[in-house]
Length: 65
Image (cartoon, rainbow, N blue to C red; front, side, top):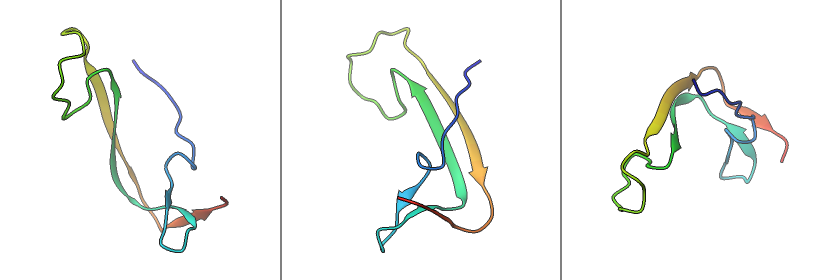
């Protein structure tokens, strides 16, 4: 089991007006040494990746920079 907390700031993006916002939508988080799409050979064969998904619902939320 892997457990961690993502803060509002970590989930935010910078909009076209340079404000920090959290937008609704579906997201996937991956952790581990071999991320999806990795094509290199630097990681050990036993290194895996754990991923999960979540959805933010509601209206766009603006947070302080």
